[in-house]
Length: 63
Image 1 (tube, one colour):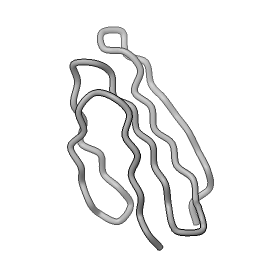
Image 2 (cartoon, helix red, strand yellow):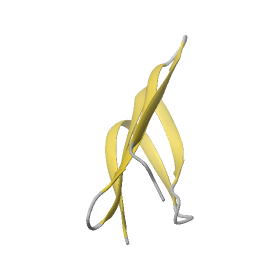
Image 3 (cartoon, one colour):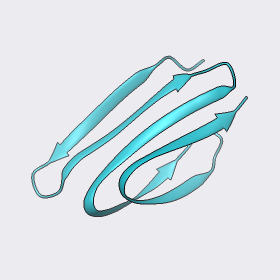
Image 4 (cartoon, one colour):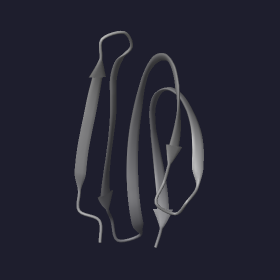
């Protein structure tokens, strides 16, 4: 079971990294934000990995 949640971390050199998720009737919705000039490897609960450049992006896992 996944409860809605949101969290963030602010680094001194790069800025704010944030992520959150919620359950919808179709599955799980994730929102990830990466600071400018950075990249991240996003691992989702279904085992998939996505490389994400700076900015906000949404991910969806159907259930």
